[in-house]
Amino acid sequence: RRTPDKLLLNCFSGCRPEMIVAAVELDMRALFLDGARPSVRPQAERLTLAAFAAAKYLPVAFLADAGVVEQPWGLRITYRTHDGSPAPRQRKRTALAAKDGSTWDGPPGGAVLPYGLWRLDDALELGSVLLVEGETDALTAWFHNRPCLGIPGADMVKILAADTVTGIERLYVVQEPDRGGTTFIANVRQRLREIGWPGAA
Image 1 (cartoon, rainbow, N blue to C red):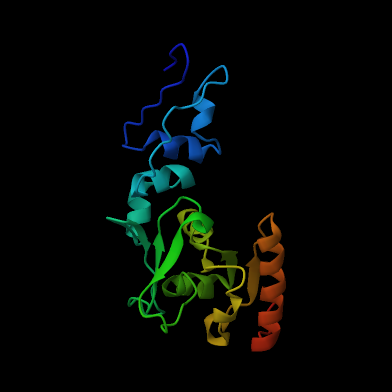
Image 2: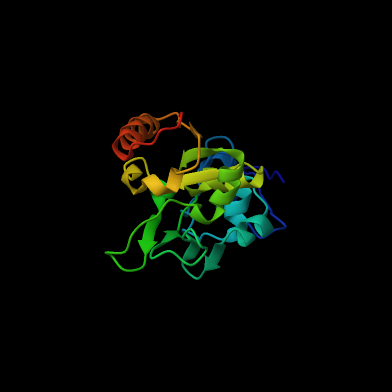
């Protein structure tokens, strides 16, 4: 709704206005017309499952089924081992963009695993898997019924073990359009050499 000096937003799913404008890559200043500025800076809001779903264009129910759990401090993205049991460390997300609020829960010495190990049977059956940087891309691929494995950061490729990709003939490595994407591709290439993976990437 438009008033004389600003645009007003309302989400019937409970998203805060800050989350709505962030989802379309704007900020709160875009709502104020004729150069007006908000007199009070919006207070940072807790990241909710509804806001995350809206920003990532994924259904809330799908994310919940995939193990994205709303907590008092934000979201927990559940990591599991090959057999489906909880991984030693879990991802904590407090912002829509991982770089703005993402940490690890669990023992500091605990192993960080690739995201999606418990879903690799689909990749083995198909003979191929997407390899992406981060959980959101993996979730998006799963929503579209594509086997996918997520590495939680461009510099964390060493967590990819030989037995993780054994039996998979082809990897489709997705490069994001930034410096991290270039780093990710180079690190994956090096890691596949180190583990002696015989397939095609």
